[in-house]
Image 1: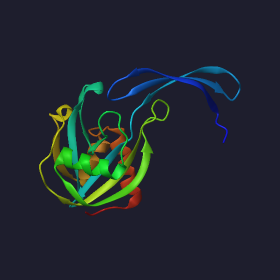
Image 2: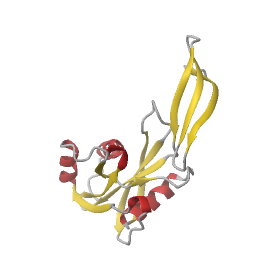
Image 3: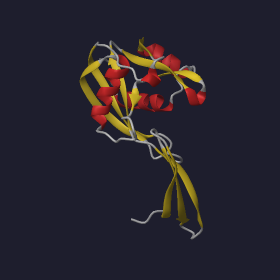
Length: 182
């Protein structure tokens, strides 16, 4: 398969326990050469916990935007590790909310920011929920977990209270799926 952009070389220009910054020398279709810089991050899982025609959300401070954010539970494995999406989904749900899902259904796979990052994510619908104790990571010490009725979640989306792109995109999969009860 011929690609519109050919990689000539690649180099890691920065690496931390959370991401790699990569700089590739490239050749475009017209023969011109250039540099393409992008972020490599491991894929993550996003879980939509559905219960009593409402959803469990988490709120936490998101440092890059200097604001608190309501969103669906989501995360990845530590140390740039890749993992099986369903296992990540179950772990994130349990760690962030204390909930365990009797039913976990894959709704789809999405990409975050294709123009600047390799990271993608799998979206799962969680139902038949059992409460338990959350096990927050140190970065999540301010995390709050709360259940909201569906209409309130949709209002939060309409009025800009929920601005997390991954959560908004994942909710589209719920609408397309037609899931209305849990």
